[in-house]
Image (cartoon, rainbow, N blue to C red; front, side, top):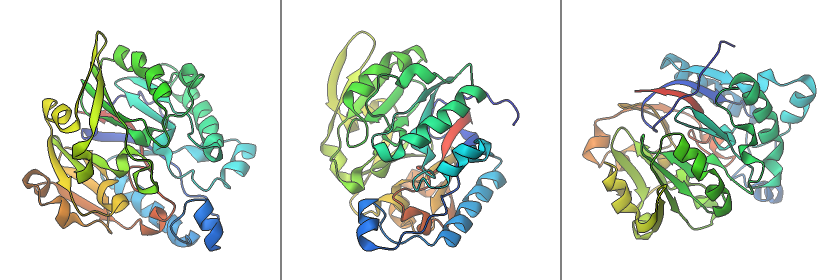
Length: 313
């Protein structure tokens, strides 16, 4: 693998490199087991792998360098990794803030092996960027709960899979990476509101798409010198975003998409794009639709399955 220097200051700038992990080829069909592992239905392994390849190809056609981290694991680690049914959801493992890459900490014991395996690789690949000790004291920090809005602002959900204590512990590192404001929200702790990116997402350069209930939630904004409370809408507008409130939605396909560049979104074919395009600025964006419905049964969408390494403005 050629050297890569992680850099990202937004959710929308041109994506140049991304980490993926193909789904584990594990079949589960018993309803009670599906419920316990939080799958919405039985996943047909062959179809899931085919969908993964289609998503990967769409990224490559768009000019994105794709790295499948599991292919670099040792033989022993691969033997375990192939049995980890949530490993496809790489977004939670780490996040790039400017030129600093912070490791996550699994909010559930079931996912801890993925974090350990991937972090060892990241430390080897990105020694100048990846802060492997940053999560030593963290309780839970999954980066599906984090949005790097722009060069100044970061939005974090301290909820079901990310603890407020853990957010507090990484704030100074984020400030040191050049960001001036960190807003923390606390969303309902339900299966369909598990992570921030199941409730809201950036669309293009200056629109934030969010479930309508989020209009009523305040955020706690931290700066290096002081803190304050304000409503989410106020915070987002102050940083240049118009908000498109969704009153009807299907969480994963409609909201858990990936910005490829300021004009293009990679989105599930199951998404109700007409709902998103009711906003005039979103209507101008290009939508690349890929079939990921089988993968979505495991509890995550396209954003969950991608870990951006390099975005260039």
